[in-house]
Image 1 (spheres, each protein chain N blue to C red):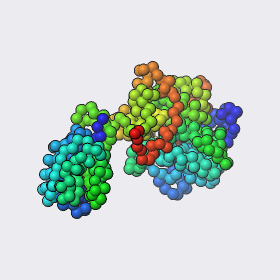
Image 2 (image 1 turned 60 degrees about the vertical axis):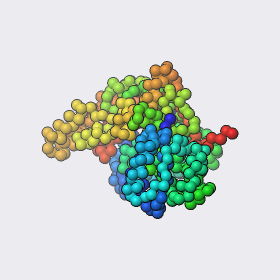
Image 3 (image 1 turned 180 degrees about the vertical axis):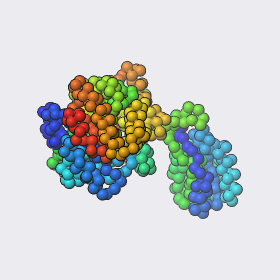
Image 4 (image 1 turned 90 degrees about the vertical axis):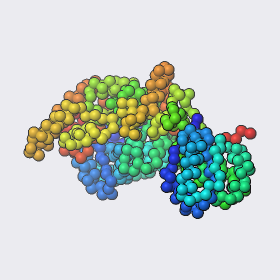
Length: 309
Length: 223
């Protein structure tokens, strides 16, 4: 973030150039946050911040701004508030950004959001007044210029804003040029979709290097074969390679002792991600890793060592 | 250009007519767009005559009218058929929403209690591939981007009408909406702009759409 002002711990660590590890919290369709708070507490010693998802796959969950605030208040873990442009128009989002600041939030990840048609309220009106790039631009205007559409904000918000990227996207060039637009809009960091293909990842990261935006690579250590299979089937734009699925399946079928199974799953994750991240780090392509190991917090203590965060 | 219509379920229409105590009807069937969509025209008129008569409604008159959506045309038809109009409870219109509203606007002064009903749902302003295959390619948003997007409209071809796509819901050039069967509009735009050597336009950061002139009733008045 160069000589820019620093508003958060995440902003500070990125600016210093230390290798960042961020986690992810996925609140569900509930008003009781005890499980999410517990997970936040478990990952807090190991991550700089945790993303809080905003109704992923268009399936309605408790609001991400409220959850981000509660997590910060209850656990001290800094949050990256995921904010999609799916549900609220430009006017509403501008108000939410000021509200988010007032609630103590200092990082936003700007996302388009999965179409309501994908989720459990397909009859909802898809808003998309802004898109992920123009949301970044709006945040930056509010923070850097202290205005909205040129109208002064009495006490402007102070937040960092980042965007998402998908190295798996085909055609890749379209995705790379899109990241250029996000950089031009003022993205301060990029968190990527989950990747498994090292060659493709290198090609993509090299392609966006020219935009000079720090990149945190999305990884998804898989807690079990069921989780790997579900992720492969239901998450748009991500395919878990067949050889990985086969390895995870063999753990499920060959090992009967549950404790031993857990150890082997963990070990397989370390064995896969260690060389993967190490190669990208050696090429200076990464500012950090964004680990989306939801409900798999036991991975963090060793993961930090494995990836050198 | 055709305004694309599809048929409402017959029971839905019959229920509305019964709820409104309609007995005597004047059918107006569109001879242009709805005829092409097979929701109006001569065939539609005959079909609805049969349905309504079978249900006990009296059909006082039935006409195929070109340009139901043109107030001048409708005013002429109404003048010529005023005797029949005096006898009816309602118009049943085999047209798009424009036709219905044209009849409401042209009759409401002389016949303030006249009811007007429609048998169709209006889908979109459509491009015709062949009869029975119509596609929404233009939304009439009032601020045409086509000169910058290689002649492909992101407002209609992108399920989210994004100004800066593609989004993360694109997989192998297909859109998440509709189970990855339709093309991603922004990949189509990318391919077009690449083919005409104008990827500089694809790289351009576009501002959010300005809704200040189109988020409410719109009109074009030039004389």
